[in-house]
Image (cartoon, rainbow, N blue to C red; front, side):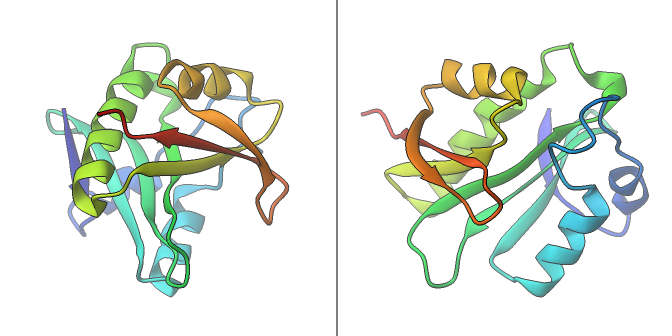
Length: 146
């Protein structure tokens, strides 16, 4: 399994990623994410790959005028959900973010009704900060463990 930058080579596969029915409102499409990343150079969109197959997408970064490191998006394609990819890639992404940014914590946000994602994030140690982001999503934080 590997985390790779979104390149021209894998772009069609990234754009073809879809969430499962019922999940459409909980995360932006990959096209929307890539457009956002094009406007904000601090965002890093990445393809989540198993061998040569793109199975998911993530986007992370640090806001320009903000000290917080965000795992802003994590999406596993509907055909690969339920196979452990979300858990495996979340672990790899967290390792990458802590190493790349040398930060003491990582933030993310999610809608209150996204119970499956909430359970996954809590299993890694994310806790609610009590804050809401600009879209009304609940903010969670993971502290680096020594």
